[in-house]
Structures are given as C-alpha cells and as structure tokens.
Image (cartoon, rainbow, N blue to C red; front, side, top):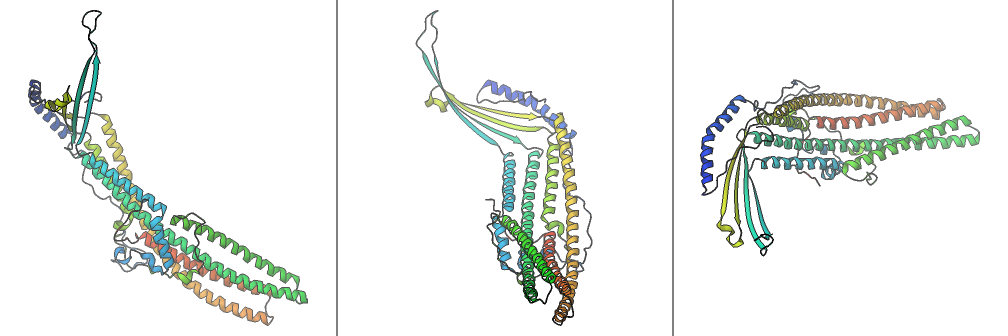
Length: 499
C-alpha cells in the first residue's frame, strides 16, 4: 500500500444490517488477505536474520610476566582493591568520589534514561485505550414562511467514545526493538562500571601524585635548609676575610635554584589538588589535602597473580561494546521484519443521546482490523542497509576494544615488571651515593675537596633520592593501571546515584 492511501478497514455495528453486510464482506476477503500475507512471508523468509553470535576476536594465549596460568582476575581482585594500599585517607577519598563524583552521576543518569526508554519500547507492544467525552449545544432559528422565522430552537447532544488500538506483533518486529533497547540499557550499565573504575583510578593516581610532591617538597626543603646553613658559614668567612666572594655568590645561586624548585612543586601540588577536588565533586580551591610523605602513608600493592582468563567477560568497556553489537544486531532484525505486513486491530465504542439521562440507553460498537503491507516501500530497504552498516561498525568497534584491552594489560604488566627492577637498581645507587656523600663531607672538613665537589655530591644524592621517589610513585600508578586494565573489582550491590 502506498503512502497516503487509506488502509482497508471493516466495522461491525451491533444489531445493524450494515454490520452484517460488512461481516459477509470480511469473510469473503479474509482468504485473499491471508494469502497475501503468506505470500509476503514466503517472499521474506529469513528476513529477520540469523541468531546473534559474539563477533570473532583474536585470541590471547599468554601474558608477559604471568607464569601462573588459570587463576581468574575475579578470584584474585578484591572488590575494594584500593584498600590494599593501606591508606585510610585514600579510602575516604574514593568513597567520596563514588558517592558524589559528577562524572559518575552523569553515567548514572544515562542508565536511568536507557531504562526508561526500554520501558517505552515495551509499552509500544501493549494495546492502548483512549476515551473522549463531548457535549454540544446547538441553537437554530428555522424559517417557517418566506420572510418569517419561528422561535429559536436549542438542541443538545451528549456523547462518549472509547477506542482500543493494538498492533499485533506477528513476526516479532516489536520484540526485536524491545531487545535492542534492553541491550542498550545493559551497555549503559557497563558504561557506569567503566566510569566507576576510571574514577577510582584517577582519584588514586592524583592522590599518589600529591603525596609524591609532598615528599619531594620535604626533601627539597631539607636540602634548602642545609644550603642556607652553608651560605651562613660562607658569609661569616667572607666577613672574616677567609673565603672569597665568589664562594658566597655560588652558594646564593644554589639556594635560589632550590627555592625556585620548591615554588614549582607548590604550584604542581595546588593544581593536582584542584584536579582531585573536581573528581570528588568539590569546587576547586576548597579541598585541603594534609601534607604527608608518600612512602610514609602508601604501601606498595601486590599485583594479582594469575592469568586474567576472564578478561573479556569482566572488563566493563568490552561488555558495553558487546551489548552495543547485540543492540545493532536486534535493530537489523527489526529493520528486516519491517518489510513484512503489519496487523492492527482497532475497537471503537460510543454512546450518543440528545438527553443526558438517556445517554446509556443507546450505543454503537465497531471493530476495524487492518493490514499494512510496506514490502514495496523503498525506505524499508534503505533502513535495513543503514542498520546493517551500523552493525558492522559496532562489531569492528568491539574488536578494537578487545585489542585495546590486550594492549593495556600487556603494557601495565611490562611497566610493573620494569618499574620493580628500576626501583631495585635505584636503591643500590642511592646506598652508594650516600656513602660517597658522607666521605665528601668528611674530606670537606679536612680541606681536601672544593666547594664545587660538595655541591655536585649533594645534587647527585638529591637527584637519586627524587628518582627513587618518582619510581615508587610510578610503580603505584602502574599497579592502579593494571587493576583497571584487568577490570577491577565490583561491589556485590551496585547503587546508581544520579542526583
């Protein structure tokens, strides 16, 4: 049937010869209509498409530095895995971010939106009932003879109508749409979990950076105080004529350099603290993180041992990507089934009377089945092609998500392994430099070394200490990244806070 043409309908009126005549017409036309529907069905056999299957992805057989195979990440990772760092303040920050972080609230609102849309799709499969009432008062003045008129007449008309409409989902087109939206809802839930994991990781990494800057500031301040003491000694020696002026100027330059570095550390800390405040849902500038050294508060978290064999079933971004493939698959089926005839049934009943007291004494009832055959509509074919292309995109995005997950796990494993080795080497280097620095200071008291040699020894020792501190912070961040790459841990009950 072309767009704009009226659909064939048949009405049955209670107790009327016209209704009996239409009934006869329906019985005569029904075989023809049934044959038409069967012909359309045979022409479109298999139009709904095959059953859903997970897209093929490259398999991952082994992982770097993972010698204990078979243990799943689900068994190895505690839901509140960040508590393993042993810092109660970090635990408080994470809980606060989960409770009132704006990014997570946005994702929670999208979950509620997808849930509501799924309910809207399900409602479309149910019959709809509408009712209307009306009352009209008509005043007329009939003409009795040419040029003469009778007294005005007042006519009242009261009515009530009800209509029941139902599209019968013979082929399952509406059900495919419902399943597509339910898959979209499941994908939005997985998005929330991915956002949850990202938020926890960002809070932890930002907090570690603040703690690193705190400890670095403490060490720089210690070096600054020591150099100021040396400057005081040199200035006294200059006054006594023992030391040259160049020695004092060199020491002042060293003090100034350390002071500049401390000012930059304070700047970096303030910026990191503002970033943390935003993650927590607090206005920037209103969060004050106490100053504590990193290695005095945060313990190194052990990496979970075991092959993450269930990576594809626990990483929320992979789960979301697959649900979107399922959504696209169902939408393709819906578009294919849209080429088949659709069947609708409309029941209409009404009451009408000129007197309100007799409104219930007269009634009418009509039944209007209809068949819409859009199989020759080119728009349905275009829509099918569009949905097919979208499904291909969703499948490729799923494969890309899986490959990215493999890369992230591999990179995190490699980083953790090498950071540990670097930290061990840095510890050995620091022990040697501390011994060298002690000998240089002893030689300085005996006048065996110059001031420049002392400066160089202090700078080298401080640089080694800061490098070890940076490696410790990087190892913590790499561990967080690994937990995130493995899919993290999940609470037994998930509560969405959307506002």
